[in-house]
Each structure stands twice: as structure tokens, then as C-alpha cells.
Image (cartoon, rainbow, N blue to C red):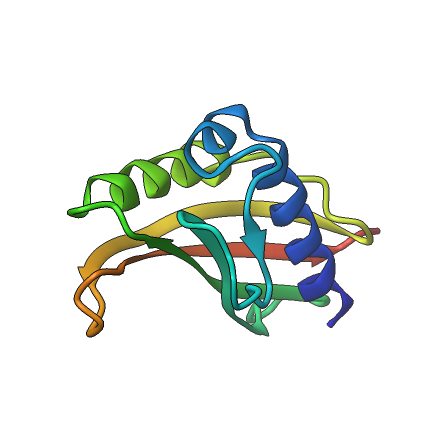
Length: 135
């Protein structure tokens, strides 16, 4: 399961270095695994990541990944712009994943909604990635 950690690192490095995303969430990009209590909005978090066997491929894994966006901008515009930048950075990207080959990474869906506090908007971007152990 080393591939799951290496994939997370590759995603983080790619997003952190993306100029378009930095324009939306700051430079350095505010991307957290566990955000601090005083995190400045907008920011992103690395969400759930599940891996299952890629049937019939020795050492192959299918990854279901979620990235979350948090904003206090009035409306969904900022969240959608950030999700768009994440899409541009990751969809069909050629990420370098140590110890395995990335077969592909694809955007599955995005959503934006207002949280119950009434002032925070949240977005989710879901991706599916497939890795195979390097030969």
C-alpha cells in the first residue's frame, strides 16, 4: 500500500506547485492534510483516499480520492474556480509516483454547497487514479 502514500505526495506536490491554483488559494498554496484551527480562507484539504485491488493486475490499485475546498466568499464562485484549477492540474496528469507507474488519474465529479454554519462554502473534487507496481 506504499502506492497510496506516494500518490498522495505526488498530488500534493503537483497542486502546491501549480501557478493557477496558487492564484486562487495563495502562494504557498494552502493545502492541508489536517488544517490548523486558524486556517486562512480559501484553502484545500486532502480528503478520503481509498484503494482497492485492480482486478487481474498484479500490484495494481484503483484509488478513489477526494479533495475538499473551503471558502468564505459570498457564493459558490470561488469554490468552483478552485475546483477548476484542481481539475486542470490533475485530470490526465503525468504524475511521478515513486515505486509505481501511474496508469491514469481522472476527474470523476465536483460539487459545491453551503455548509450549515451559513457562511462557509465547501467544494469536493473526486478523482480516480490507477497505479501499477513498477517493473
